[in-house]
Image: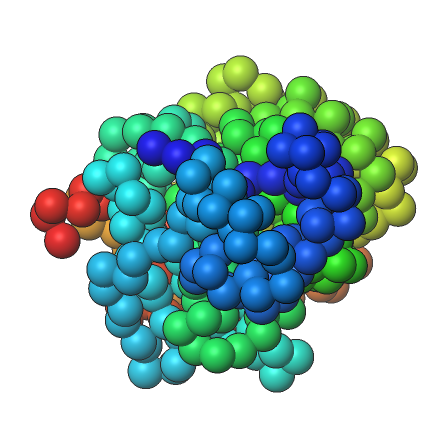
Length: 343
Ligand code: SAH
């Protein structure tokens, strides 16, 4: 397969132009055609010489995803199933909020983390997505809907920090003012807690929002839900989060999916308060979404509200995440990779 030109950030494109014997300013023109004009063919890049267009066609591909399926929820959320052109398919979700459109992107085809309550666990890991494939999810939805997406969250299939370099390169591409121009403040990375990569991300100086899938303040319970806790326990995780806050001055968002009779009682809330007291953070409570063959079920509304109120009373800002797209399995933890032939 030809190389995906969307994998190149602007500096890399400039070097490429030099290698191809072209003037470096051509890179900016190409970058704009790809990421602003969102063209689907090199032929559309009309300010390039015919010769350069041919060179690009011979060596590169624009890697345009094919939409295999599109589902729309009652609340307007849309879930896309994309053919990533190698026999695999991934899902991305478009949500509309008052402040604009947010896309939830996948970072890998399948996931290795093994969280017990997440649908992405049920399928074998195939590979990580390239940075171009991460950005193409946004471009493909923008083309299909004829909209401009203002926010992006790495909360689809996969563990973004297990695909560190491509995720960071995708963010550089998204940030570039000559292209999509999405500020880092509009991008959130959600991680199950790969501690060494949290330190690395803090040192990038990028101003992205970091979300931590915490789900329990108790090591025993968290390890049962999330095997990653056996490698990096809660103490190590919180230490890394404090480093992230210190370096970026940004508030961390802790995600906590409430599962009935598991992590949703007052004792759990007390442990959480003890753990997070004094930290620059926010707790995002997610009513857990039921997945096929999953053992966890949603807490009662009463417990969810009690949990939130307790945290707020103790000075920890907590909100309940709106459940978007659950009727089409597009809500948190409901995305899974698929193989193209089965669709
Ligand atoms: N691997 C990353 C990002 C993907 S999951 C991570 O673990 O953070 C995005 C969010 O959905 C995470 O907070 C995850 O814990 C949560 N999630 C997974 N399964 C869920 C479920 N069944 N119900 C509610 N939230 C879930």
